[in-house]
Length: 121
View (cartoon, rainbow, N blue to C red):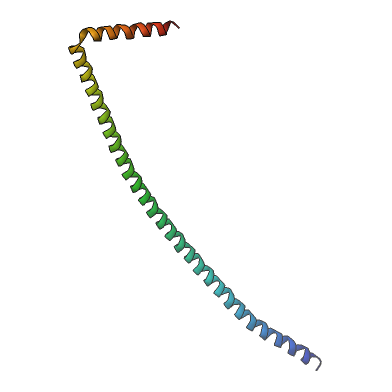
């Protein structure tokens, strides 16, 4: 009969061990499911961030393109203005030379003389 009490505790310890393994397995499965859900959520968040950043990049690119077009138009207007002013100055110079040819020749000689003096130094 000494063997009977020894066997009883071992069978009693086997049944609780089996019952504790099932909850552990259930916990492991629950943890795996939660990890899978977290991974899916992280993938969704990453996709959302990528979409938002792509949208912002597109907005910035559109804004930059608009600014480039605007600056190009402004630059073209400035070039046109400078060309028209240069044309007006050229016409005024031609008119002045036609009206006063001796003054124009004397001015040219004087400017040439000054440039010659400056280039000697």
